[in-house]
Length: 177
Image 1 (cartoon, one colour):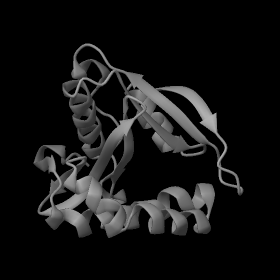
Image 2 (cartoon, helix red, strand yellow):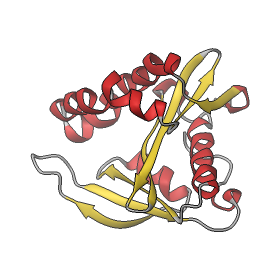
Image 3 (cartoon, helix red, strand yellow):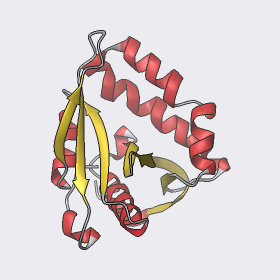
């Protein structure tokens, strides 16, 4: 599936709230259920994919959406963390994986980080999320540490991408997404 050319990336607005939340509602069970279990999925959805958790990021201009045929099919959320830009969320609806949308969102996040003069992008993913690991490695991210989350949940693996040079340097066609 190659539909990335018909996808519009733009800053999220208040009208996008339900679409952004729906991305989380659809991606989290499939992504984290097999890795961390139903309780972790329920906790994450209740904590990070609600109107109360999402509205402040949209209002602050930190959420980008990928829209295809009038539907939000992917999103990112970023914010500062210890002087770096943290990529808190990058999700694409399962039926749009491998369509290039994740790569579009990643390139946009890299470009924004550079434009805002951040020296690196940091993020974490759960150990065992091999799709995320492969995707981020494709863009040049490397591991900086691990954090135990406890309760039988796999470790969070922290990775970073030092920034410098052209945003296209770290992006290749054919990325997962």
